[in-house]
Length: 315
Ligand code: ZN
Image 1 (cartoon, rainbow, N blue to C red):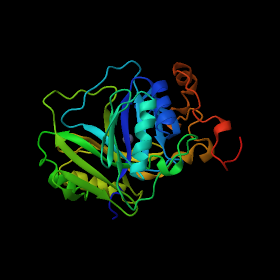
Image 2 (image 1 turned 180 degrees about the vertical axis):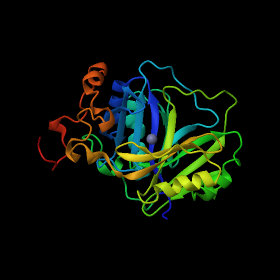
Image 3 (image 1 turned 45 degrees about the vertical axis):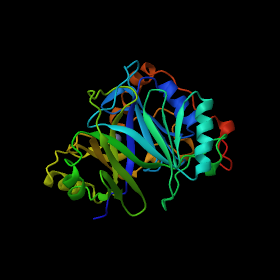
Image 4 (image 1 turned 135 degrees about the vertical axis):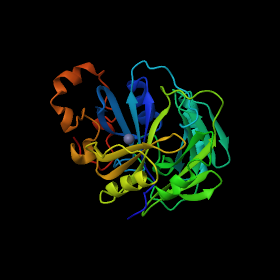
């Protein structure tokens, strides 16, 4: 059985898909790799942003709940997402770029902290790692300065020790330092860190993380479910999300975890060069397209043909 290969994707909540799309593709320079609906509520969008190929490890997704009030991260929630960049020069670039979009940031040597327009916490880390950079193409962002995928996440907990055995035994996470763990597999790794929860009550809502998914091979997926149960977890049955298969459970500190398979991937229902351009509906809800599509606000295609990646086939 192979170790989990770090973060597969992170799913968060937005109150406004159009503004969210403008920020993550326009400012952050990620690629919209899938425009689909929430499979548990197909009347609302589920947007997936990632690197050029839509690779697990760079995949940040948002469920849209139009007009939803802002949430507040508390105990049992992830409060900050760390993304890798290639150098401290990239941090200079991002500080300026975010300021140009009206976003304040705080620089601390090898990292830059900021919040997205709905208050979701981020930090960019200029940390040497061997993992392949997962980069999207954007006309204003030189490749060597672009975001390179997830470094890890920070979660709030009141009992930092509560999850220790579970993270080691069920999931094979390694200890990096006090309250910092690492999930590292064949080709990638990510950190999972705890901070002391604030006294205020946690509140899900816009600008908060809904869950984090860890990356499994197709072959090992069912075995991971068995190990979660064996270690006292209470996972869902395997759910076919069409682009990957998933199980969900809460780790002892309360953070909602998912283990998702590497495949089949985002190119399973549309060609790689046109990812995210059309509304994709998984087979289970495709028959509802005539009802679903008119109810969703139209979103612009963030990648017009004139901006296609150099060398990509014209369309
Ligand atoms: Zn997920």
